[in-house]
Image (cartoon, rainbow over all chains, first blue to last red; front, side, top):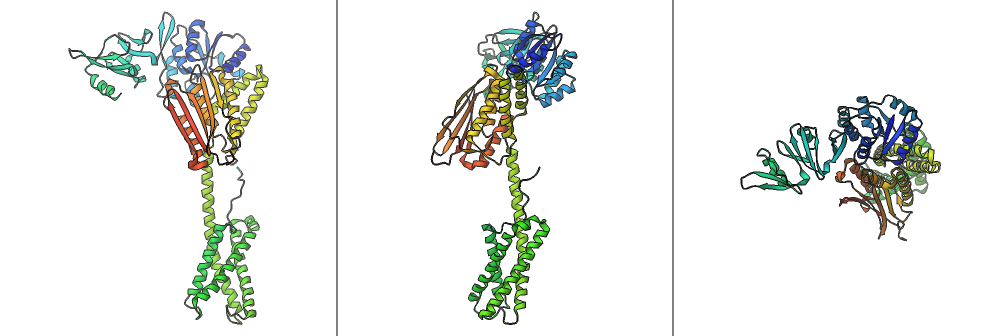
Length: 244
Length: 348
């Protein structure tokens, strides 16, 4: 079994690698220091097992586990944590395996024996139990078997098209399969609705423009595409822009 | 838990405030004696003088006796001790009255009761002493109890404010040690020593103050452990050579600020950053500033950080009053905390 070690602390990775080295049939495929790096490594190395630390910079373990589900063959996940008392309760409640640091080799061996893939729904349940107001730091899109991660901070606007939502960001655009309303709910205060099919990043909003024919468009720095504001959303948006 | 000081119930008769209370009550008694309608037909001022001298002398005598008998009295239960103290004061007064009466008769001053009525004088004195000392002892007893409660309450408050090291830190450090034992046993050993020092300070009582030097050493131990854990992500710029190491300081006043800087500033950054710790001397003050970068997503002061800062601010206020202060300056992608503490020593 090929395993990927994910922890932001070099010594923690070192110890886990040493422990895994003592277990028959386990091969350490690679290491990663953040959830973001873990997803890149998972695409590249195709591990069957990922040992995920929970608290990491850039993207934490819970969010990484959620994005791992988008892989064609998602790996089994074992969470590792030093001390996260309410997260542990959430793991117990959802029958998800976890290890507490310093990890014991017997516990590690047992966890590997019954390690399982996690469904996105289960991870979401844990996330909302740990921290109800939690938001992802990245959106994840599948492009030809690989994963594309877009930092939420880089997103200019989100446009709904048929079954998809097109994520327009600083470096281009990707398609994700998520309803626009779910995104609006998750990122309240970060994105604002200007139209039935469009959410705009509040931080990127440069102003509103009225054309001679009476239509109003939202202006975003560096974006040329016209983003029309619907009549229904205009009053609320005006108020918001004025308060900025 | 065993309390180091047993609960005191007997007031400190040798202390100035108690002595003063005793003297005020004695003077009131003297006044009552002189003003009583049944007193002999003599000018009241000289009578007040005589009564004052006599009653004050009795009162001080009682106070001195109770003060010197404090230890055996304290060993009794509160009730037995109270009754004993009361009986003691009645006996002392009776004895003293008898002596005074004898002296008065021998010298022929006629200040007390006439010849043959010595028994009446002594009994009367003893009765007055019995009434007054019962009331006074009770009053002082209640007062002492109240003070004790206030002391206990404020100690509990300070204890509650005692700095606590995040449990996360303990478990992460244990993990670091577990990892080091295999490859670098010498470093593992030193980390155990550093960790022990930190927890000795954190688990110790807040009663014994440390010094700034000890605090800087603790900070150093803490940073050494975190440096092992975070590796290249943590850089430290330390400039505290100017600070007076012998300045008295409550324990773990600065370490939590450094812990905050790492927890909120360095750990959430993939590439880490530098924690700046600078100290300088000002006239009558020392100033310590701790600066750390702040990740873009956490520009708002998170609640746990606020709690830690409020805790340290309250402890500074408790120990130094308005002479100490803690100032927070977020902004520009950076977070800075400045602590100013009074430096009373004149030779610095």
